[in-house]
Amino acid sequence: MPGAIYAEGLVKTFGEVKALDGVDLDVPEGTVLGLLGPNGAGKTTAVRVLTTLLRPDRGTARVAGIDVLAHPDAVRRSIGLSGQFAAVDEYLTGRENLVMVGRLYQMSGRAAKRRADELLERFNLADAADRTAKTYSGGMRRRLDLAAALVVSPPVMFMDEPTTGLDPRNRQALWDVIQELVAGGTTLLLTTQYLEEADRLAHDICVVDHGKVIARGTSDQLKARTGGERIEVVVHAPGQLAVAEEVLRAVAKGEGAVEPHTRKLTFPVAGGARLLAEVIRELDTRAVEIDDIGLRRPTLDDVFIALTGHAAETEAANGEGDGDEAGTVTTKEGVR
Ligand SMILES: Nc1ncnc2c1ncn2[C@@H]1O[C@H](COP(=O)(O)OP(=O)(O)O)[C@@H](O)[C@H]1O
Ligand SMILES: [Mg+2]
Image (spheres, rainbow, N blue to C red):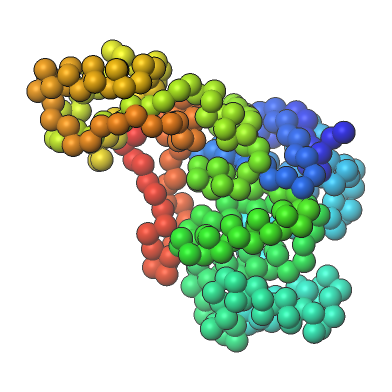
């Protein structure tokens, strides 16, 4: 039986760009699918097609069992959406915004107010509840937009990069809310550039790049696919990266990564402690000074590198980043 979100052969072209190049999805009811991919991968386009905001050139999709092309209105009634389009009314206060959404969904005034207060508390907006949204910072608006999407719990939810630009505390708050939603039976499609987020929240992960699903599975399955352990070396001086890279490539089982700014090299290997000792000897022979060396299990970062040949860049794409949310973006520039 097809899942609560089902798509087959979705194609969407913008001029020369194939934003979606034959995407198939199947999300079982009550589970979370993490659509993981770098900027421009096609994540938002997929969400827009599935939420009836955009017609695909080709392919079919059903959400909550309803065909998105044939019955868009019925689909809209069954879904919640939060994302890169703010559903916030500037001239209402934070609380009024949330109460209004509750009223739109036929909640009683009292129930809507109770739900609004609960969400304002959760997203650390209680102190600003009676200010108009116009006075909110970008990060606060983003939280209000998320809260608005959570006033009612529809059977199927879409969240497009919900935590991009949130500080760690608010990110954690949102993760808690998501876990509760899903425990309550909601099916969720979540897009993210954060590997840790997919790891934490998603039952299944689809890795997308250039409009294609290039891998799918559970986090553990994806990690297992990329092979065994990683050797990680931090050299003392940037000038020694090249020699260290040569040493590691000679024993590596696949593509690795070199990060000049952290002086760290990571390569997949097989051979455990014996290999580790061998590498230490070889680096020593070639006069490479090591700050740190070790073996570890693969992370989703490694999965991404193995699949795409580059790291999942989380570039500072959050226009909302406005001081109030500093320090939330992990950049990995320089990773090959
Ligand atoms: N409305 C549009 N017009 C032209 N190009 C678009 C439009 N929407 C998306 N694209 C392009 O399609 C590709 C996928 O975009 P998008 O789905 O937004 O990726 P993501 O959400 O993964 O960052 C990108 O190359 C983007 O520039
Ligand atoms: Mg996007």
